[in-house]
Structure formats: C-alpha cells, structure tokens
Image 1 (cartoon, helix red, strand yellow):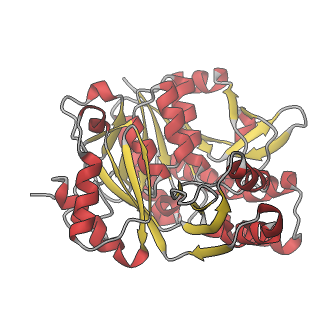
Image 2: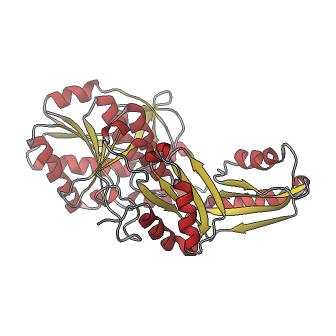
Image 3: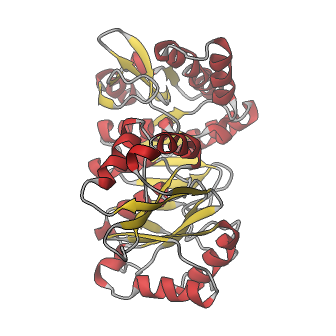
Length: 407
C-alpha cells in the first residue's frame, strides 16, 4: 500500500463530466490498495470570475475579504468530487483549508504555509476514507481568517500535503502529459522527459514553462517530495521530478524554454561612478518592481556609460514613469524601452561538468542571424534576450543544436 496525493487543476475539473473523470482516476488508485488524498482547484475560469467580482465591488479590496471570496471556487469543486465519489461507492469527505487546518502566515492573497495538522487526516486515511481537500486555501490562526496561497497555489497545497503526510509522491494532473524539452506547440520535435531534476524544473518554471508553479517546486525540493506531472485526459506515463541522484545519465541540456513576459529598459549616458546602480535599482525595489537581467556597457571615457535591464511587461509602465520622474536626480541622458523582446534559456544540470554550453548557444544564434541583447547565467542555465520576432527560430535551432530533437 502506498500513500498518494493527487492534485487536479482547473481544466481537469472544468465541469461535472470532468469531475466524474477525476473520480474514476481516484477510484482506480483506491482499488489498487492505496491511501489517497486529493486536492483540487476551482473549475476553469471560476477564480478569474471571482477576482473580477471583487474588483468591481471595491477597487482597493480588503485582502481578507478578497481571500474569503476567491477561495470559494475550490470549496465547490471539493464538495462535488466528494459527492461523485460517494455515489460511486467510494468513502470520501471534502475538507476546506481551515478544517484541517493548513496553517499559514497572515499575508492574505499570497500566504505561505507554516504547518499542516494531520492527526485527523491520518485517522480518516487509516479508515479507508479518501480526503478531498480544497487547494489554494489556508488559515491564519491569530484572527481565524481564511487565506489564499496566490495563483497556482493548489500545486503548493498538493506538495505540502504530500510532505506533511509522508506520501510516496504527489501526482499533478493537468492538461499536458508531462514535461517536454521545449514547448511542443512551437518545437514539433520536442520530446517528453521521463525524469527531470528539482533544480531543472525550478529553472524551467521560473523561465517560462507553465507546467508547475515555482513555489511548489521549491517546496518539493526542500522536502524531497517526488512529483509526477500527468495528464488528466490520458493514461500515458508522466514526468517524474526527482533528486539528481535518481537520474543515471544526465543530459548536458534538458530543455529550452522561453518567456514573453519581458520588457527592456535602457538608460543612456548614465554617470559611471560607484553607487549609481543602487540609486536606480533601490527605488525600483521599493516600488516592488522586480529587475531580472542587467548589463552595463564599458565606459569609453570613464564618465558616462549605458545600462540595460529587464522588468516584466506588467511593470514596464510603472518603471518608466518612476525613472522618468527622477531623470534630473539620476542624471541620465535618455530612457529607451522595448517590449518586443523574449528571454530564451537553455537549462541542464549537466552544465556543471561540461564546458562550451554557452558558446554553442551563442554560435547557434549567430549562425541564424539572431542578435543577443542581454545575457545572464547561473550554474545550470544560460539565458539571452532577443527580439521577439525570432522566438520560434531560436527555440527550434537551439533544440536541434543540443541534440534534443525526438528521433
């Protein structure tokens, strides 16, 4: 007997027929002798609708009431799934986050889980009951208020439950059947990975791959929870996210990702003196504007240089307004902005022991006439900023160059 956590996203529970499909999958695991915990999202589109109602009701919403409203979609899904399971002869009960409870901090709208009290869950599982838990939810105990974990929080709920209950793995069911070497909608020869490391999945999630939510991968890596990404609509094997030592022979590069959520800002003629970077990025940080890639050109005269950095497209207008309003104080000559850019990244833990990965990336793009605007690196990834017009050409060319094409 194994203990398994099954997480189903919004597309998997989009309507009652989809919920019945989920119930059939849960029943198969129960009939196989497993103890099963299920965590569910709201039906597809439901959370967006609830958020829209909150915004219409109050432009500056009280986040405690925001959480009370937007968390309700998961309650509906959990209750319906429990009812369908019961009608199918499976012992099941729905749980809301506060009933377990999933204890969080008080950061309404983006709360972080502090602990999960599992005594009653353990007792019910031992009795053979399936626990159907509303994901995305928690409880802030001091004020006894419902909290939510932020967008994609049901992934985090699932992994946290698996860690707290010592589950064999957490199966994340979604509308794709695994993690691919690149976006198969763009790269026809992309192939599904049998296994990927936590570190690689974390980079993929943060660099544009939408399969798993970043916080859930961080939690899985911290608590060593084995995660499997599977399709709700087929029985094909999924992709396991595991420790590096579970993968016998690791490829140098495991994937090529992209993110269109990038915008570039260039400050021309900035003073080339100590402390200037802090005078730019300090106010941006205070305004909660996250800066990603940064490059500063070499100063020809020792007095003036150019500085380029990226922010999200969502933050571009605010960043431009903030910097333009401080142009006299910062003493730069001109501000240029460009939102027609994309960040392309190659990722792989094999980079730690292989030289020449970045050089191959640069040469491949150069051979295709693609200009690199900004570069950033980490131990297991190389990212470049290029013109958005070259996204598909870059992805396909790099996918081939690193030997990732399906045979």
